[in-house]
Length: 540
Image 1 (tube, rainbow, N blue to C red):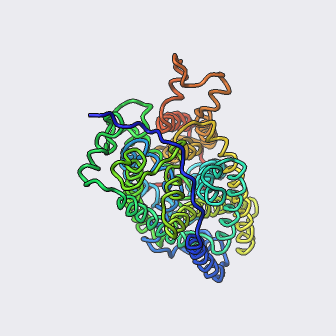
Image 2: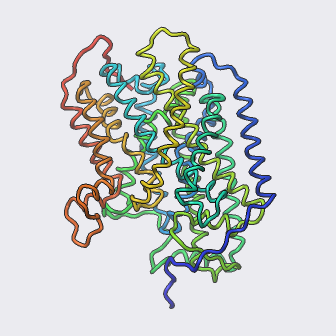
């Protein structure tokens, strides 16, 4: 039997121009977005509880959809198909860790958050340690969220740039930068309209558009198959050089494997706890429900909904592999070149029919805006409740609302600048798009997870060890970046005879996170508890 072709391709086909039908679909999407924004703008917000928590009246199902839309973002639309196109289905196993994380959040974190009746989850740390711990955690979140969401905005701007400037040039920095600025402006304007309520309901809209685009893509890709399904599955089963692309679990204990089972169960559980339990961006959604029980159900439902959502995008990647690597099994002769980072974008721009291409681009815009809207709203909430209000107490509610909206604008500008910087960060990183985006989330999580664990499950720690633990976690993850290694040692981790330090830099980011959480928690627990007037021990 002949060897299967490796992932190589002839020169890319020229991308057709967007047709009037495509622009019409995009215009319809933005019209709906503008109408919903206008409707939310008509709702008068009188205080920060309404603006940042939706007055705690959001339905469970809407919050669950918003959690999925925010956590997946444009990285899912672009990065997940890339993952199965260049690899297999093992990324789906990361949901094992996310389910475990959701259970921890539902039973131990959310009840404590609701008990404080605060718009910020970091109120827990003030009650457990003191006000300085709350401020330190909030600052850590803000820095970490700028990095993590900046990367997501960068990924979300990729399709818009390709749309405006073409497949061949759209991902160049000189074209990506102004596209990022445009996306940031749209996100800021929409979020200012109605606060967290507008973010959640727009997330529902964005999710429907996102999934509609993905399912349509699967339908169109499979229509090009001219071989029976058993033969298609057989091709996927042998994959490249006999490595099955249908593999769901990687039991390897190799620390360099991205989605091995140990990494999914240990590393991704910690990543999930960081995302849903210590990050104001996602945790804020759960606080918009009317009770702790409803908030717990929303996070569990959101995690479970994420499983079929990810599966859909992985199927897109498998279909694209058949199209580009086994074209003899299809009725078209599709070709492409370059990295797998833009394989789905290439397909959209070169193979999608008129009108449908516009729907795909609407889905990609939806994914990008979802990340932008939620992040800047959460950053505004954390700034007001944790940093500004303690310094300026007893102000009227409208004063805090006005300052909160100003904070939203500043947060949007900072995210835009970080997204532009992410263009160069990704180029020096050399990782896959999905690993790059997920790894950017860990800067704040290493310290925050350690401090929250200490606060909830021990009686140890004090303000000084909290601050040291937060700083240690942040700088540990920063120091684990490849560009830091190259800057310090002047060699790459891929050298033929790597030292032990080089070997550490080669391991998957989830293991770096696991080590960072462990070290930070050990440091945090070295502190002897210090009593203060408002100290309490929170119980789930």
